[in-house]
Length: 358
Image (cartoon, rainbow, N blue to C red; front, side, top):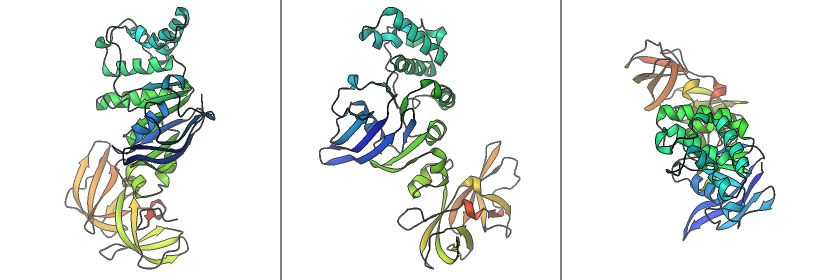
């Protein structure tokens, strides 16, 4: 295992800077997930850690050793790519042990390490097959096993599940969660899927345009997003946002006025002048549906997504559509006038610059 530190790491291609002076620490044994939209720089940052991309500035340290200029093979890392990158003419066993064979490890040592990795991944019965005889999920297990046998200081995963279909992604995500503790090493994992990030990570790093927007434990990012970008990215369905103006403030409680004149009470300890433009965030799972006139705000149901165990109501409120997540057996239909209720303590208040208030 190893502690990873990035100190003012930057990357430029000509005049275009794609990574802007990132400082980050991944503790020994931590499972850290880089997440963000396409083009945010997460894969580039991972490749810089691996040594596949040079740093334009800054340092990469592993256990306080500066590895910024070391070749990938000398960094003690193992990488699992988006494509499986398996040798088609080799068996699963040969694919998994090939790196050790190149390193001239004894044959018995290779066999023992491959057997142990295959047991962890539950692919012992596949060791004599060729990649063409495997499913996508099985091929990805082999690619992970090839990394495990090397016993690296740090595992690097570059969107390893993105080539799988939806059902297989869920299955492999569960399998990765199971073997997470068995890996017993530091992991840096890149994905654009925030569900993967929430379920696998000890630490999530949210990136946008080559900068860290927020880093922390998954539930901390969910409960206290630092800004509108993180609030909208973490959570599925995404957080609802309503444009409001601040009204009267009484201690930690603030009245917020919707464009239609409705007043909502929310929790906000930061002093706020009356009339200040704000954005109010409420997650769909924190909204409940009741009769019109009985909630915090009223609206009209314009879409009802019935998924069986749950239903998502799209409700037009003050010319804005918000989503409420309710039980799947709700009899409310499209066109109904409803009230929406929420706990003021579950609301999120953001300033005009997008940063969290308080």
